[in-house]
Picture (tube, rainbow, N blue to C red):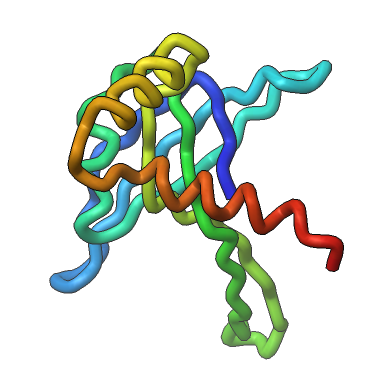
Length: 126
């Protein structure tokens, strides 16, 4: 999944344990009548993906929806969701057209190629 919005909050990388780090950030999605402030998290080696962007930048976030179950000490069952970002790109129409131009002039494979093949799969009748 992906969503494009304006970077509103850029958190610091937090070391939760010796083996786990995370970084949270918020984007504002203005694509509907009411702005949506959406919180994401980056984990482990992905925490540095946000370094290249400043608050106020338009970005496109690729993410996975994660859900987990937890039982409290009182035996109460709770469910939690998180949006785990795995890729961040600069947003905006001008950036997209520049990316396409660079992809066509470059001989190395680019991330755009898999997206093109997945859009062809959407045309299948089933």
